[in-house]
Length: 223
Image 1 (tube, rainbow, N blue to C red):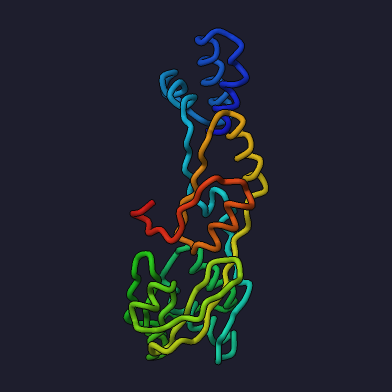
Image 2 (spheres, rainbow, N blue to C red):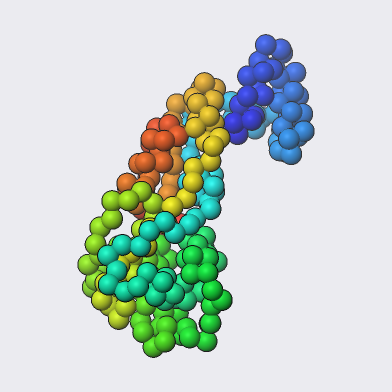
């Protein structure tokens, strides 16, 4: 959409027909297909744009940056969390598996229950392992310890006793701030970021790239 806004601005000094042809042709050369000039005209009047955070504003490359408040050895906590998440292809699950750094033995894992927007509960070596956000912890009667680090916080409980949390961070794309500035110059008044991350993470990313509003702690259906 940023490219099309720029193209329309470039051709605005010509007649409307040339502007539309120029915009459609320029977008096509960049691999963006526009069905007709009426869509470009509608887009030129847009004043609000909403973005998903992960993979759009950020790179979507998650990595474990810290483990806090765990009475267990960090490697042990990561081992059980990674195994509980072994059947998931979610980027956060993959980051846990990558941080563990060893092949996963799926035969150790049974009774996997993936709860949308909350996390996963599974049995690993006959231990009930709960891996997810504060909502998941509340649903099993566990009080998590808050974390003030910037990043996605993954809480872990063994047999419904709190076992610590894992901090997972995602890098902001180098081009995101510039994109927001160009959209503003093109007439977009409101930029809104939608994310399932916690309030502090959403606020930090929005402030870093210059997004005017954000909605945090959203389930997929809320977005």
